[in-house]
Length: 327
Image (cartoon, rainbow, N blue to C red):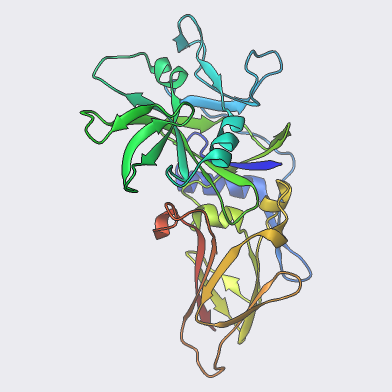
Protein backbone atom coordinates (compact mmCIF):
# COMPACT_ATOMS: atom_id res chain seq x y z
CA UNK A 1 0.00 0.00 0.00
CA UNK A 2 1.39 3.40 -0.99
CA UNK A 3 1.58 5.98 1.79
CA UNK A 4 1.14 9.72 1.19
CA UNK A 5 1.96 12.54 3.56
CA UNK A 6 0.25 15.75 2.47
CA UNK A 7 2.30 18.55 3.98
CA UNK A 8 0.40 21.80 3.99
CA UNK A 9 -0.91 24.68 5.94
CA UNK A 10 -4.32 25.73 7.17
CA UNK A 11 -5.41 29.35 6.67
CA UNK A 12 -2.55 31.28 8.22
CA UNK A 13 -2.36 32.85 11.64
CA UNK A 14 0.50 34.32 13.62
CA UNK A 15 2.74 31.98 15.57
CA UNK A 16 1.65 33.51 18.88
CA UNK A 17 -2.03 33.03 18.00
CA UNK A 18 -1.43 29.38 17.14
CA UNK A 19 0.52 28.93 20.38
CA UNK A 20 -2.39 30.30 22.39
CA UNK A 21 -4.89 28.09 20.56
CA UNK A 22 -2.69 25.09 21.39
CA UNK A 23 -2.67 26.10 25.05
CA UNK A 24 -6.46 26.32 25.00
CA UNK A 25 -6.98 22.90 23.41
CA UNK A 26 -4.01 20.67 24.37
CA UNK A 27 -3.05 19.31 27.78
CA UNK A 28 0.43 18.04 28.62
CA UNK A 29 1.09 15.36 31.23
CA UNK A 30 4.14 13.28 32.06
CA UNK A 31 4.10 9.49 32.30
CA UNK A 32 5.66 7.55 35.17
CA UNK A 33 8.67 7.00 32.89
CA UNK A 34 9.07 10.75 32.50
CA UNK A 35 7.88 10.83 28.87
CA UNK A 36 5.62 13.75 27.87
CA UNK A 37 2.06 12.78 26.89
CA UNK A 38 -0.39 15.09 25.14
CA UNK A 39 -4.18 14.92 24.94
CA UNK A 40 -7.06 17.14 23.81
CA UNK A 41 -8.93 19.13 26.42
CA UNK A 42 -12.63 18.40 26.62
CA UNK A 43 -14.84 19.49 25.01
CA UNK A 44 -12.91 19.87 21.74
CA UNK A 45 -14.06 22.92 19.77
CA UNK A 46 -12.95 23.72 16.21
CA UNK A 47 -12.22 27.33 15.31
CA UNK A 48 -13.71 28.93 12.20
CA UNK A 49 -11.25 30.35 9.65
CA UNK A 50 -12.09 32.44 6.59
CA UNK A 51 -10.29 31.63 3.33
CA UNK A 52 -9.24 33.77 0.37
CA UNK A 53 -11.53 32.72 -2.52
CA UNK A 54 -8.51 32.80 -4.85
CA UNK A 55 -6.94 29.91 -2.92
CA UNK A 56 -7.67 26.28 -3.85
CA UNK A 57 -9.33 24.22 -1.13
CA UNK A 58 -8.14 20.68 -0.49
CA UNK A 59 -10.74 18.33 0.97
CA UNK A 60 -12.09 14.78 0.92
CA UNK A 61 -14.20 14.02 -2.14
CA UNK A 62 -17.90 13.95 -1.38
CA UNK A 63 -19.85 10.75 -2.01
CA UNK A 64 -22.11 12.36 -4.64
CA UNK A 65 -19.23 13.97 -6.57
CA UNK A 66 -18.35 13.11 -10.17
CA UNK A 67 -14.68 13.15 -9.16
CA UNK A 68 -13.35 9.62 -8.73
CA UNK A 69 -10.19 10.53 -6.81
CA UNK A 70 -10.40 10.44 -3.01
CA UNK A 71 -9.23 14.06 -2.60
CA UNK A 72 -10.73 17.08 -4.34
CA UNK A 73 -8.98 20.33 -5.23
CA UNK A 74 -11.28 23.22 -6.00
CA UNK A 75 -12.40 26.80 -5.58
CA UNK A 76 -15.45 28.11 -3.73
CA UNK A 77 -18.27 27.55 -6.24
CA UNK A 78 -20.03 30.79 -5.31
CA UNK A 79 -16.90 32.83 -6.10
CA UNK A 80 -15.01 30.98 -8.84
CA UNK A 81 -16.26 28.73 -11.65
CA UNK A 82 -14.86 27.11 -14.78
CA UNK A 83 -16.95 27.27 -17.93
CA UNK A 84 -20.10 27.66 -15.84
CA UNK A 85 -19.43 24.63 -13.65
CA UNK A 86 -17.53 23.84 -10.48
CA UNK A 87 -13.80 24.52 -10.70
CA UNK A 88 -12.80 21.23 -9.08
CA UNK A 89 -10.51 18.34 -10.00
CA UNK A 90 -9.17 15.28 -8.22
CA UNK A 91 -5.72 14.92 -6.71
CA UNK A 92 -4.54 11.95 -8.76
CA UNK A 93 -2.53 9.68 -6.45
CA UNK A 94 -2.46 6.87 -9.02
CA UNK A 95 -0.71 9.15 -11.52
CA UNK A 96 1.90 9.99 -8.89
CA UNK A 97 2.62 6.32 -8.16
CA UNK A 98 2.79 5.57 -11.89
CA UNK A 99 5.34 8.32 -12.50
CA UNK A 100 7.72 7.21 -9.76
CA UNK A 101 7.28 3.52 -10.63
CA UNK A 102 8.06 4.00 -14.32
CA UNK A 103 10.57 6.89 -14.27
CA UNK A 104 14.19 6.39 -15.30
CA UNK A 105 17.43 8.21 -14.55
CA UNK A 106 16.75 10.88 -17.18
CA UNK A 107 13.80 12.40 -15.29
CA UNK A 108 13.72 14.27 -12.00
CA UNK A 109 13.08 12.72 -8.60
CA UNK A 110 10.66 15.58 -8.04
CA UNK A 111 7.25 15.98 -9.66
CA UNK A 112 5.09 19.10 -9.65
CA UNK A 113 1.44 19.77 -10.42
CA UNK A 114 1.39 23.17 -12.05
CA UNK A 115 -0.03 25.42 -14.76
CA UNK A 116 2.56 26.37 -17.40
CA UNK A 117 2.34 30.06 -18.35
CA UNK A 118 3.23 30.09 -22.04
CA UNK A 119 2.30 33.67 -22.97
CA UNK A 120 1.04 36.97 -21.58
CA UNK A 121 -2.64 36.26 -22.20
CA UNK A 122 -4.99 36.90 -19.30
CA UNK A 123 -6.81 33.81 -17.99
CA UNK A 124 -9.45 33.14 -15.38
CA UNK A 125 -7.97 31.98 -12.09
CA UNK A 126 -9.93 28.72 -12.35
CA UNK A 127 -8.20 27.92 -15.66
CA UNK A 128 -4.83 27.61 -13.92
CA UNK A 129 -6.19 24.74 -11.82
CA UNK A 130 -8.41 23.00 -14.35
CA UNK A 131 -5.70 23.00 -17.03
CA UNK A 132 -2.74 22.27 -14.73
CA UNK A 133 -0.45 19.35 -15.56
CA UNK A 134 2.06 17.04 -13.93
CA UNK A 135 5.46 18.46 -14.91
CA UNK A 136 9.02 17.27 -14.39
CA UNK A 137 12.54 17.97 -15.64
CA UNK A 138 14.29 15.75 -18.19
CA UNK A 139 17.95 15.37 -19.10
CA UNK A 140 19.38 15.32 -22.63
CA UNK A 141 21.69 12.69 -24.13
CA UNK A 142 24.67 14.35 -22.42
CA UNK A 143 23.08 14.01 -19.00
CA UNK A 144 22.32 17.72 -18.60
CA UNK A 145 18.94 19.09 -17.53
CA UNK A 146 17.45 20.35 -20.78
CA UNK A 147 13.65 20.41 -20.79
CA UNK A 148 10.53 20.52 -18.66
CA UNK A 149 8.07 17.91 -19.88
CA UNK A 150 4.50 16.83 -19.31
CA UNK A 151 5.05 13.80 -17.08
CA UNK A 152 1.96 12.03 -18.45
CA UNK A 153 2.55 12.19 -22.21
CA UNK A 154 6.27 13.21 -22.26
CA UNK A 155 5.60 16.24 -24.46
CA UNK A 156 8.02 19.18 -24.07
CA UNK A 157 6.52 22.15 -22.22
CA UNK A 158 9.66 24.29 -21.83
CA UNK A 159 13.07 23.95 -23.45
CA UNK A 160 16.27 25.85 -22.76
CA UNK A 161 15.59 28.19 -25.67
CA UNK A 162 12.01 28.96 -24.69
CA UNK A 163 11.29 32.68 -24.36
CA UNK A 164 9.06 32.40 -21.30
CA UNK A 165 9.55 29.88 -18.52
CA UNK A 166 7.01 30.43 -15.76
CA UNK A 167 4.65 28.13 -13.91
CA UNK A 168 2.03 28.37 -11.20
CA UNK A 169 2.74 25.48 -8.84
CA UNK A 170 -0.04 23.94 -6.75
CA UNK A 171 1.99 21.15 -5.14
CA UNK A 172 5.20 19.17 -5.52
CA UNK A 173 5.81 15.47 -4.90
CA UNK A 174 8.82 13.35 -4.08
CA UNK A 175 9.27 9.75 -3.04
CA UNK A 176 10.97 9.45 0.36
CA UNK A 177 13.66 6.82 -0.12
CA UNK A 178 14.17 6.44 3.63
CA UNK A 179 10.54 5.34 4.16
CA UNK A 180 9.04 2.24 2.51
CA UNK A 181 6.70 3.06 -0.41
CA UNK A 182 6.07 6.57 0.89
CA UNK A 183 5.54 9.91 -0.86
CA UNK A 184 5.47 13.48 0.37
CA UNK A 185 3.10 15.97 -1.27
CA UNK A 186 4.25 19.49 -0.40
CA UNK A 187 1.47 22.02 -0.88
CA UNK A 188 2.19 25.55 -2.09
CA UNK A 189 0.54 27.42 0.78
CA UNK A 190 0.17 30.54 -1.38
CA UNK A 191 -2.13 28.66 -3.76
CA UNK A 192 -3.63 25.69 -1.86
CA UNK A 193 -4.77 25.12 1.71
CA UNK A 194 -6.15 22.11 3.56
CA UNK A 195 -9.64 22.64 4.92
CA UNK A 196 -9.99 19.45 6.96
CA UNK A 197 -8.14 16.47 8.33
CA UNK A 198 -6.93 14.41 5.37
CA UNK A 199 -5.91 11.30 7.27
CA UNK A 200 -7.71 8.28 5.87
CA UNK A 201 -7.35 5.18 3.68
CA UNK A 202 -8.74 5.05 0.15
CA UNK A 203 -8.31 1.90 -1.93
CA UNK A 204 -4.61 1.04 -2.13
CA UNK A 205 -3.51 4.38 -0.67
CA UNK A 206 -3.05 5.47 2.92
CA UNK A 207 -3.07 9.24 3.41
CA UNK A 208 -2.08 11.50 6.28
CA UNK A 209 -2.31 15.25 6.38
CA UNK A 210 0.51 16.92 8.31
CA UNK A 211 0.89 20.56 9.25
CA UNK A 212 4.55 21.49 9.30
CA UNK A 213 3.72 25.17 9.64
CA UNK A 214 6.04 27.98 10.76
CA UNK A 215 5.74 26.98 14.42
CA UNK A 216 7.79 23.77 14.35
CA UNK A 217 11.51 24.53 14.66
CA UNK A 218 12.46 21.15 13.18
CA UNK A 219 10.01 21.47 10.28
CA UNK A 220 8.92 18.26 8.61
CA UNK A 221 11.64 16.36 10.48
CA UNK A 222 9.90 17.14 13.74
CA UNK A 223 6.66 15.73 12.35
CA UNK A 224 7.97 12.50 10.80
CA UNK A 225 10.84 11.65 13.17
CA UNK A 226 8.85 12.87 16.18
CA UNK A 227 11.13 11.70 19.01
CA UNK A 228 10.99 11.95 22.78
CA UNK A 229 13.99 12.41 25.07
CA UNK A 230 14.88 10.15 27.97
CA UNK A 231 17.51 11.53 30.33
CA UNK A 232 17.59 14.88 28.55
CA UNK A 233 15.47 18.01 28.34
CA UNK A 234 14.72 19.90 25.11
CA UNK A 235 14.53 23.65 25.53
CA UNK A 236 13.58 24.67 21.99
CA UNK A 237 15.56 25.50 18.85
CA UNK A 238 17.29 22.12 19.04
CA UNK A 239 19.00 22.78 22.38
CA UNK A 240 18.99 19.87 24.84
CA UNK A 241 20.52 19.63 28.32
CA UNK A 242 21.69 16.39 29.91
CA UNK A 243 22.14 15.94 33.67
CA UNK A 244 24.19 12.78 33.15
CA UNK A 245 26.79 11.44 30.76
CA UNK A 246 24.22 9.43 28.78
CA UNK A 247 20.83 10.16 27.24
CA UNK A 248 18.42 8.35 24.94
CA UNK A 249 16.33 9.47 21.99
CA UNK A 250 13.21 7.47 21.14
CA UNK A 251 12.45 8.21 17.45
CA UNK A 252 8.95 8.02 15.97
CA UNK A 253 7.36 8.28 19.42
CA UNK A 254 4.64 10.64 18.16
CA UNK A 255 3.16 7.77 16.12
CA UNK A 256 2.94 9.73 12.84
CA UNK A 257 4.59 6.94 10.82
CA UNK A 258 2.83 4.09 12.62
CA UNK A 259 -0.57 5.72 12.12
CA UNK A 260 -0.19 5.67 8.34
CA UNK A 261 0.98 2.03 8.34
CA UNK A 262 4.77 2.41 8.20
CA UNK A 263 6.87 -0.21 9.99
CA UNK A 264 9.35 2.00 11.84
CA UNK A 265 11.89 -0.83 11.99
CA UNK A 266 12.17 -0.50 8.18
CA UNK A 267 12.90 3.25 8.27
CA UNK A 268 16.33 4.34 7.08
CA UNK A 269 17.20 6.91 9.76
CA UNK A 270 20.64 8.45 9.33
CA UNK A 271 22.47 9.42 12.54
CA UNK A 272 25.41 11.84 12.62
CA UNK A 273 27.04 12.87 15.89
CA UNK A 274 30.36 13.43 17.65
CA UNK A 275 29.10 11.42 20.63
CA UNK A 276 29.36 7.67 21.06
CA UNK A 277 26.03 6.15 20.11
CA UNK A 278 24.30 2.82 19.60
CA UNK A 279 20.91 1.57 18.51
CA UNK A 280 19.23 -0.47 21.24
CA UNK A 281 17.13 -3.59 20.65
CA UNK A 282 13.93 -1.56 21.17
CA UNK A 283 14.93 0.90 18.43
CA UNK A 284 15.94 3.69 20.80
CA UNK A 285 19.18 5.59 20.19
CA UNK A 286 21.57 5.91 23.13
CA UNK A 287 24.21 8.65 23.19
CA UNK A 288 27.19 8.95 25.55
CA UNK A 289 29.97 11.49 25.94
CA UNK A 290 33.25 9.86 24.91
CA UNK A 291 34.99 11.37 27.93
CA UNK A 292 32.98 11.83 31.12
CA UNK A 293 35.18 14.79 32.02
CA UNK A 294 34.34 16.53 28.73
CA UNK A 295 31.44 18.95 29.19
CA UNK A 296 31.73 20.74 25.84
CA UNK A 297 28.58 20.92 23.64
CA UNK A 298 28.07 18.14 21.10
CA UNK A 299 25.83 17.71 18.08
CA UNK A 300 23.28 15.10 17.05
CA UNK A 301 21.63 15.01 13.62
CA UNK A 302 18.78 12.63 12.68
CA UNK A 303 17.71 12.49 9.05
CA UNK A 304 15.28 10.56 6.85
CA UNK A 305 16.79 10.50 3.36
CA UNK A 306 14.60 11.71 0.47
CA UNK A 307 16.65 12.05 -2.72
CA UNK A 308 19.84 13.81 -3.85
CA UNK A 309 17.92 16.67 -5.47
CA UNK A 310 16.21 17.54 -2.19
CA UNK A 311 18.86 16.62 0.37
CA UNK A 312 21.61 18.89 -0.95
CA UNK A 313 20.82 21.64 1.56
CA UNK A 314 19.84 21.89 5.23
CA UNK A 315 16.61 23.77 4.48
CA UNK A 316 15.20 21.02 2.26
CA UNK A 317 16.05 17.95 4.38
CA UNK A 318 13.81 15.91 6.67
CA UNK A 319 16.17 16.37 9.58
CA UNK A 320 16.33 17.14 13.30
CA UNK A 321 19.50 18.83 14.53
CA UNK A 322 20.38 19.11 18.21
CA UNK A 323 23.08 20.69 20.30
CA UNK A 324 23.60 18.63 23.45
CA UNK A 325 24.87 20.34 26.61
CA UNK A 326 25.94 18.79 29.91
CA UNK A 327 24.22 20.35 32.93
